[in-house]
Length: 295
Image (cartoon, rainbow, N blue to C red):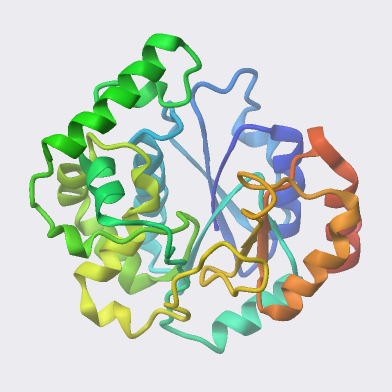
């Protein structure tokens, strides 16, 4: 299990439900996070908990990809059967026995989500060199004007350098459960990944899908390769139930418990997003009623 997050009280609850002798947990905390607890404060009874060196992470910036790569590089020498990328806003929707039985029954499969919402123009924009990558979410007028101007410029004068053919760039959710072969491939191609994505924006949603597209031997191992349109009835291939149709994404509330139970029945083993600052009750309900643990 590979984790990254900033809300530490909620993170401790997530670690507690992942704490299982069959799991090792690799934890990366944003260096910008204030009052971050020492790694020793995140205790486990059964799992090995491995802190990964902190880096500053900026939404929309390559630092998101670097955080994922650092987690994979820390874990890959152990050659795990599966690597599950989670944030602290995630929760499992089932107990660890159920999750391990499922992945044991699907060895070598890749659990990633492709999106049908991308297009060539958007992908070219994403991998083109941006000059304000760390302020993508800025509300400052000058930053918003600069971002809009860059998009227009990229449409008129494509800057994409074809280190990887544009038709091989994949797009979808950045959360994944991948096997050791794919994890090792990604780690070994870190230099090429930086050449392609290092100056782009929102490139975390391109990383794993592009790795699969570049290596055809993995395409046949994708559990569900049908691109999603962000509709509630779809199975999201990474088995994360993420509600994009009610929000960006929607934060679950206590009244959504039945929806989450239905999502589990449909095949989703994880979900996001949960935020105790919005509704802590749903976190308690999922942990006690769906995972079957006391908190």
